Length: 161
Ligand code: 4NP
Image (cartoon, rainbow, N blue to C red):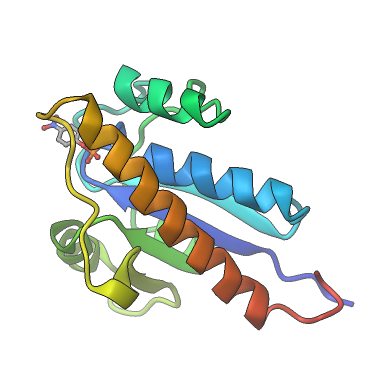
């Protein structure tokens, strides 16, 4: 049996608030499902302002409240090669989605879409707000990544799961 590893990249603007939380929540769910070998997870930002930084302390603390450690993550910028490496490139909001499309090479194989595509909602940028914005982001990314995991599981061969 050939095992095709699914590769999922979560993308926001700075890669220090929303996409690190999405990466952490999704990885946690993947681990609980016993699918760590089958599903690879990463995150990136459309901007490079925070490259090399750990997530915003408010994202780290929000994840911690849910038993998830994201403190080791390091911000990086989305690159052209990501469109070849990843099967799914998942945008947190509509602006991120447009920026991702603008960076995409002419021909690529990745599926680029909004995390909350089914409800046509953005994950709001919490950077300039208070702590409660991070709780809202966590709830949204937990639900969005849960749905994404179900979708990926449905398209996996029964022998893989
Ligand atoms: P993120 O949030 O895109 O969810 O990581 C932001 C982080 C930093 C900035 C804006 C949004 N900033 O302006 O530096």
